[in-house]
Length: 171
Image (cartoon, rainbow, N blue to C red; front, side, top):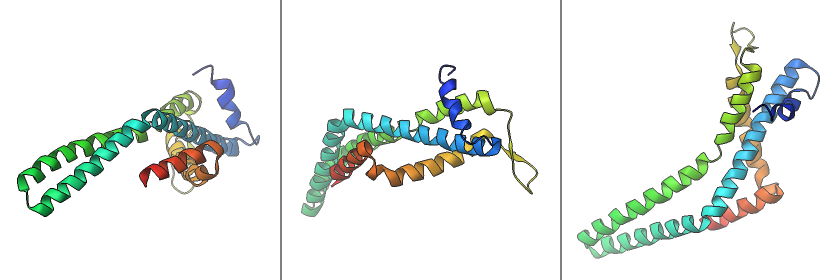
C-alpha cells in the first residue's frame, strides 16, 4: 500500500482546510472504490456473459417446461423439471451474487490504507459526546458515492454502454 500513498494522499489535500479535506478526501476515496468496483463488475460480466446467458436461458426453459407439466397435470414430470429448474436458478443466483460481490473488494484496500493514516482520528459529533472513526465515515461516503455513481453510470462513456448491455440482456 505504500506505493499508493503518494497518489491517494492527494485526495486529502484539496482545499487546505483539515476538516474539509478529511471529508472530501474520504468521499473521493469512496468514489474511487466504487469506480474500481464497477470496472471489476464490467470486466467479470464481460468475461462471463455467455455463461450467464446460458444459465438464464436454462432457467427460463425449465420454468416454461414446469408450467406446461403443471398445466397438463403431470405431477411427476413437474417435480423432476422443477428440481432441475431450481438447480439452474441456484447456479444463476450465485453467479450473479459473485458478480455483485466483485464490486466490494476495493473497499477493503481503501480501508486498509486509511487505517494507516487515520486510525487515531475521530470526527467529533456535536452534542453526542463521541466521535466517528474513519470506517463509519467511509461507509457513509461509500453509500453516497454509490448513489451518485448509479445516477451517473448511464451517462458515462464506457459504463453507459455496459449499462445498456445489462438492460438489453434482461429483456
